[in-house]
Structures are given as structure tokens and as C-alpha cells.
Length: 212
Image 1 (cartoon, rainbow, N blue to C red):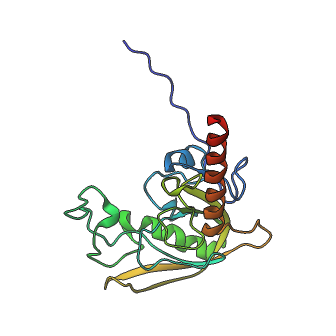
Image 2 (cartoon, rainbow, N blue to C red):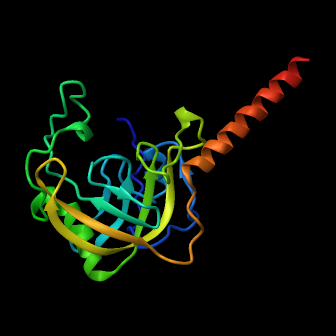
Image 3 (cartoon, rainbow, N blue to C red):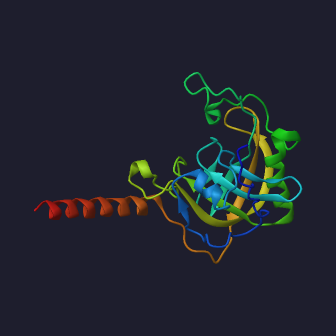
């Protein structure tokens, strides 16, 4: 019989910062971010439970109603979409059209309920930004010359939660979050673009030097 290594149990999730991964920590993949326990999901944008609250979220351009102003943001809840994707992207559930209202109830609404619980408790939420987010504060992305695709941008507090009609015609849950004070300044995408240009210039200079 093939001997299998015993499963390694992850420690329980916690609110607040994860030791060893301060604000500004970054990764190339969601898998790496998950392995470091900063956001314990490789697909879902919300991690938490209706009972305890939300531990972390990822902003990565998943919903049209998301608004990102850096220190302040409006995050759209999950669900309300067709799980069949589209004809062009049948396996990409992010592209599925809205087909019904989002909810706080049941299996589909459990992640929204976790964010609503954090609104009630005031516990901080870890925020990770991804390169697909259309925002001045999004990481540049490796394919565009950046050094990473996902970045932990610190702790935020859920200031408001409400149910309203979204841009796709169905009701969505919206959560207003405010960044907690006393944290390092956020990085702008244009700063990463400038750094990428410097890296490319330095690399080109090094190649010319080695070719002499």
C-alpha cells in the first residue's frame, strides 16, 4: 500500500495581520497568497463565516459595482451570477452574467453574511489587490512588467453595508470599507510602472555591458 503523508492542519484563521506578512507583501499567484494564509482561498474573493465575520477579501475586477479610492473602497458581495460562464469563457465563472439578486442567506450568501457580520462587530478585514483590478492602486502585474500580481494592502474596517440595485440590473450587497490609520502608504500602479521601466533600463544596460 502507498503510504501517504499525514495532512498538515492549518492553524485557525485570525483577524488582523498575519505574522511575517506585513502590508506590502506580494505574490505572483493566488495559490502563494493562500499558502501564506493571508487570503485562504484560491478562487473566492471573500474568506470568512457568517458567525465569526470576514477575515480577508481580494479586489481583482470581479464585479462592475466595485469602487476603489485607495483608503476608501466599495466592495461588491458574491453570488447572483450564472455559474455557466459565457460562450467565450465557459469555465470562467467571473464572466457569468448576473441572473438574480445577491443574498445573505444559505450557501450562496454565506460570504456576504460574513462581511455583514464584520460590519456589526468592527473586526478588521485584510485587503488584497490583484492586477486585474481597474484601479490606480492595483498591482501592475507580471505580464505587464511588474514584479507581482497580488499585494496585501493592509487592514480595513467595514463602515457600511447595504442592498441596492447593481449596474447589471439585479440587487447586490455593497460594503463600504475604510483603511485603518497608522499603516504604510499604499503603492500606486504608476509607481510600479516607473519601477518596471527602471528595471528594463537596468537590464538592457547590463546586456549591453556583457556583450561588449
